[in-house]
Length: 428
Image 1 (cartoon, rainbow, N blue to C red):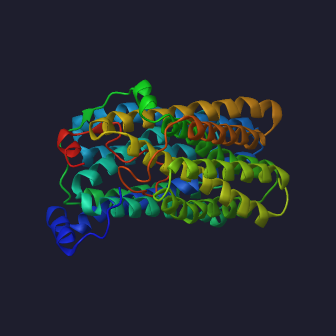
Image 2 (cartoon, one colour):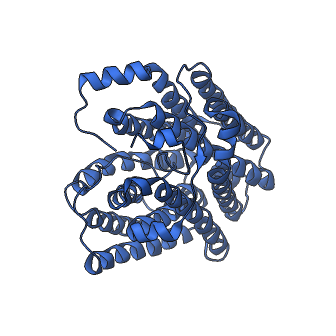
Image 3 (cartoon, rainbow, N blue to C red):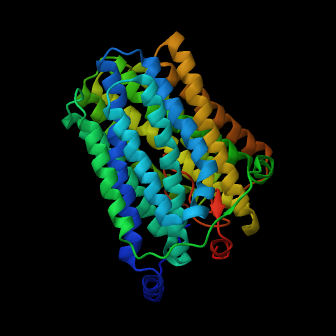
């Protein structure tokens, strides 16, 4: 959570407890990983399309990635308890490098599905490790600001990776080599860091029914954005490739999408701190619905029109993630935050696995534009649910527990998440 105007004493104390350069090592590592990750997200559907593979294969790869991410949410805790944060970070980074190497072997769809499932497992685990590490090292007074830098750095890295596709010869292993290179570079800052490791984490139980009682809108938002985020980021390049847009066009479209996240989240978050967050959530869902309708209207049309539409669509969808997290935290007692966060992470991961699978199955029958129609259904249904809760439920005061922090739906929630140490929990 963001705190107001940290004092010089706070910053000095933070620097004494955890050197800022050591904290920066984790952020830099994740930004480097993001560059390779963004490139691979863009490269895979374009390469499959160029080699004449049916778009269903690219959809299955997205589904495999989501399945791996769900496994990562469950298995990262035991891994960290066994080897600690630093070693877990390096192990998971090595798995991403192996995934990229498998992609470099050439377009073998079954191998690529397995490789991206491995990537999904590793990237979800990396975020849980990185965020729990940072949350343990940072004092409350600057935690929100540093975590905001963490998210922005990762989103910017994704954008750079997407844009890099325009410079790559997709008929070679260059994309995989670049991905492996940035992943290898990301290990260096963490491997040399002096940042103290947190105590071994304790598993937090998943209690969806309890989370629903605390915040129906928050849980519904995670379910909605888990599906929206995966289909927009995963199927937009598949559909654009199938529509005949060039490699450079797909790179431009994807690299513009993270800009929407950065542009929209801050003003929406500022408004949500000053009113019932549900109003803003309904507005973000409505904006996502309008953008997805426009994506159908302008489908196959002028590239720049689509760039603006997808920028808004992705930014509005990503904003639901951060707003839902803040709204749920507003309604929870401090001793409920750990179980709530882990349950919301599970809801996000579950939707991120199920919805792409549904879209893949439907796309085989109705074509690659299916994800847009599914996005309309999800965003509009969530908007209507929030409006119903506003009229039927009790009002929620503005910022009852804290203030908004920008986040990305490409990452798990910040980390008391699925795993937290008792020591870390007492800091909040």
